[in-house]
Image 1: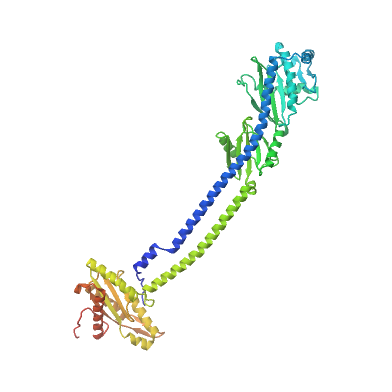
Image 2 (image 1 turned 60 degrees about the vertical axis):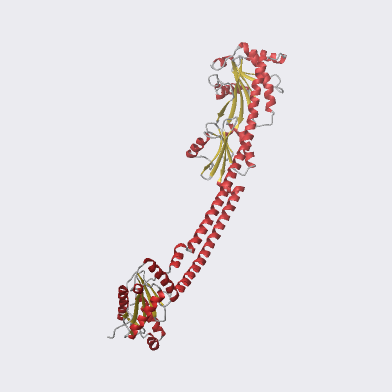
Length: 565
């Protein structure tokens, strides 16, 4: 049975296959295009993300500035009230109406609760408690030398309170709470029986006790948050102590109901593309939110709170991704709290930036899909062209029947190998082979049988030579073998081995017909004459081949004359 052997490919073809594989080049090009398109898309995503963050901060800054402005107005009024009352204590007015206040106080000061109201259309009434109730608290004190001036100054303050209550700004309430057992309020007391309870409620507020000298040595504005039983009653308050000539008279308070701050936040929210606003105090306690109490989707868990508090300690303005929410914050300038804007993923997608992001993603997916489709088509085309090129290249170098080198490529290889052997001074032998009585096989059994004989002989030749040896079909039934590095004796041994193998094998040419063939071989060597020219060596081997045929065929001839047997 014929043994097949992989024939060495010519060097140019091997270099082409090794260093230039078109499929790899196509893959590399498409990978580069894919990476570049992804990088460009990602760059646009980064730019878009920066614009989104800037828009969130801008929206939050607008709301924060609006809230800060209204709170600042209240703080400025509070300081104005303190300055006005200090001026009134320094230079009390001598009007008869104001003097009558002092007389009415002297008549009512022993009552459990009392009210002094002179002209309620211009000023506010003063509410107070008895001397006995004042003496029960260590924080309260009625200094007789300062008391009358304080009462007349409080009546002037009531006039300022009346004007302030009509200002069309953020709803707020102002108080003056005196250590002498009376107070003023922009919110009137509807029943006199409520004076005592209101006074004690104000007395127990942190804004009063927190203004003691040891609690507020700077005597500046301090902020407090009060949480009541209902959310609508929760307030934030700014308080400042009233001091004059190193004496603490009382406390001025400006309170801002959270129920009034929430509509402000809701109004700003309607002008933005969604987003929830949350107001926290300086202890990160939630004061109010634009979200309904029934919706707990915007609540933070402990881990989120820890992240936010860590960021708030570092920056006054910033943003943070928390799952599917983007939270931006800004600390208020006057209140000391922090305002948060929470934008959910759903709101982001429905907004302008979301629509742009979706369009950008779809374009990238579409481009990537088209790129992959093009890659498949082009890679298949290139692979087919490359396969066709390899087939044409193989057909140009090899004989399709015997799968040995054809005449042209064999002669090219022979010239290269002979020149290489000449340069290195190595032996170089040539074997010329011809199939005996081949024409008779074609005439008797047909050309198909002849093709089987040629293929059979070529397979045995290929399996009988070394890796560095080269065999080719140089004629109809003629073959030539190059043996670089082999001497004449070694070449004769190879030729004899080929001859004996071919002679020993039978060929099945029909279903029940076998054929045994023989070959004649001529061998030449470059070292005989010192001539490495391949055509010369082939002519010597060819002449010796015909000597073998004339001497009876099925033999190897390596000399120019064969003695008679």
